[in-house]
Length: 308
Image 1 (cartoon, rainbow, N blue to C red):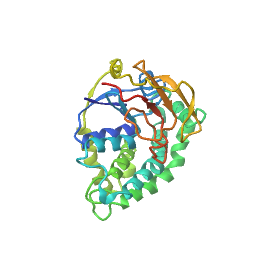
Image 2: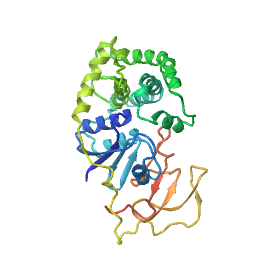
Image 3: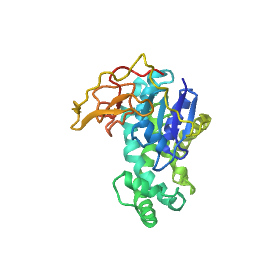
Image 4: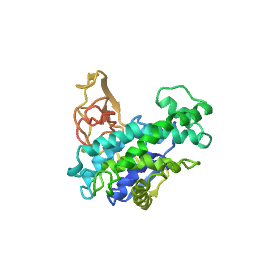
């Protein structure tokens, strides 16, 4: 069954997913999604989840690149993303890159390119973070304000490579390299290139360039969103949700209530949960900032997995 990646070209997290697929040697199809709301094809497929990327295989959906990485590792353990020798340090470095390094880099690069970003992007991202729509001048000022947070962290990343190692944590790539690479990749900007900030660090550039060539080699076959990648409806012989509780029930790990709803594209009933106590193959999950698989949300089939 084909892997389908829902993405758009200048998404740095989509670049991370593309790179991981290429590293694993997997063929994939690409569906180009809008960079801002509305995203009718995507949100209908995922039950409201709007972020990019989303990896799909048949009726299975994986949202968030940390979850995608774990699923790729489970399915294709060769060319591991999680070497035992760097366990713990790799996850900690990846968390720093994507939570402490990425945000100021995004504000800096987007601010420098404020006049060249897609229409409505600044307003859409502000709404996503619960902020009022910014003016172009405010976006430009954010670039200046965040540069002093960007430069020290570039130095930290470069210092990790000063002993001549090939990858961030040794001689074998790990999830930390993928997490840090897509942040560095974002410096190329939408129109104005910001990679001059990396020029004082030749070892960092030597680490970056092979990853860039590898990502370029990870090509896909694009399919238009109009060719909906919905899974086939469940077989009548395997009714997925024949035992549904018809009343709202509290999730064991959440204060929110769950209730029966129709799962998109199938006509079958399922429980939409805001927190699930176990991993399920049929769900669109959104790990928390701490990456916990136990505080996710998604479609959970109550009577078995759908036939595809």
